[in-house]
Image (cartoon, rainbow, N blue to C red; front, top):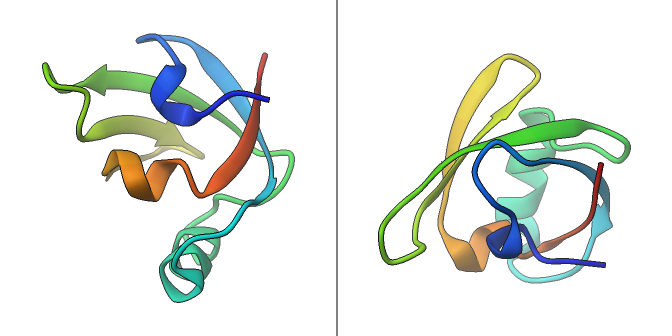
Length: 76
């Protein structure tokens, strides 16, 4: 398993599960489409690695590294 912050720009990955962290925030992300088996693409990463911009289900989200790493993902 890898962390979302380890992905490169234009790399795709699949959400496997929720890993912990702030449950209310992760529930909000899940309501926006970050559900298991959903594929997303990393669009941009800020110069210092925070935030990370992703495209998921046609929607663009910017996530802080801490927030992005509350999901277990696998590279596609």
